[in-house]
Length: 308
Image (tube, rainbow, N blue to C red; front, side):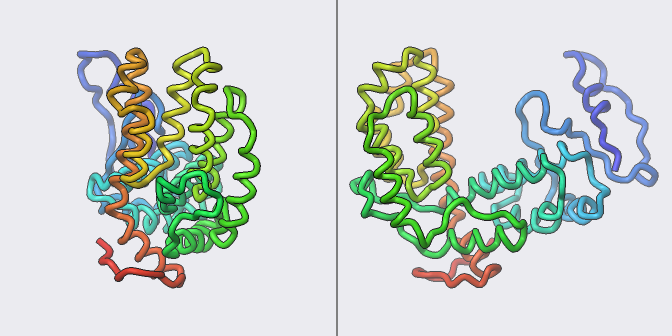
């Protein structure tokens, strides 16, 4: 496969410049990728589903684009699938990636795949009730979806989940004990990071941030640091109840943005993360049904939805 990195640069070089002519014969050159490997300005590449289905066996046979372009394409398909855009959904992204990415030895591809699978683990882990936040005896409702995802991850990609759903009670007790100390500028980001690694404990991390909020706002001299902390905390919650609770605690999205007018973009990204996490929940029943059908993990509760 010919990867047109230089061609892409030529096409984008200079505002107002005439488009560059590319010498290309599909019968001779085969596949042509006009992506720049995910570099440069932020963008997503939405290839037709039919093209992705043809490209997967080519990449599995080692005939695809360079590793950075494969990693970027993998990330794009999962991101667009999560958003339900371009005719993709998360079930399609998983099926498509299973056809080639698990056997791809490139570190870039492995890193992109693991990041996307762990984000999906976060999305499939439900939130505890807002009123129960910070209670180590509480636990997210479990319908078997996370276990099914982890079984699929291991079988299709040889990637292990970051926690065992069967050990949630013990993990919550351990994390609650580790969060009894003060929360300040030195450890707040670490606490939020731990929530990302163990989604079933993320309410405990947020409760610790709430308890230390006054100290945090006093210690963090740079508003951008605090804004980034709030954004990082917000991105992990996936329910309407939690969105409303976080907004109330912060005084509402408008109040947060008004308090930090220079940082509107930073806060807006946090709000967009929460919104996209909640929007994804419309896909969750179909994705869980797909995973449970593939993994053999029994589904607990509710009716079997239709996979789109």
